[in-house]
Length: 126
Image 1 (cartoon, rainbow, N blue to C red):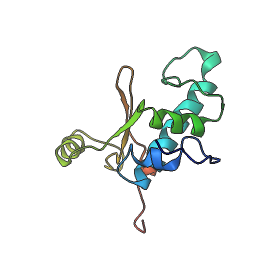
Image 2: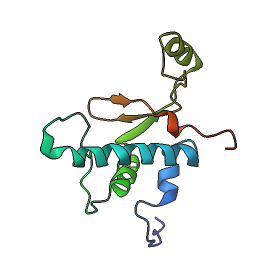
Image 3: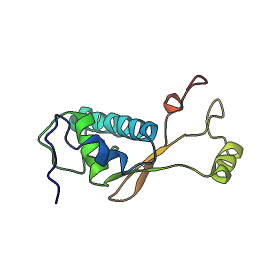
Image 4: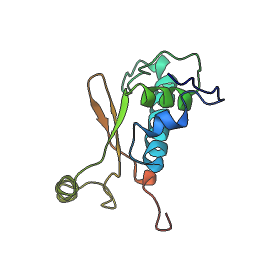
């Protein structure tokens, strides 16, 4: 078996890219999950329990590192809606401006789907 070269990034970016279909998806999924983890830590004292807690044990306390570790462990995955789902949501009133979510983060235990924010979509120049 080939020995892995030590890097500063753990999990390695190559391992993360194997779990998603593109670099953009990795960035969007990790950023969305990191915001959810940050929200979880911020609401701990309030007892709301709305956001799913981190799903992996991590030595790092940084939300983005925890999100990357969840992606590597396949605890956080993505769901890209079909055009039929987008049309159904559009008819039911998907949002204020009619923008449909570009990606959803799916957390493994309980399979809770969290819709993407309108600001997660790439702009016209992307």
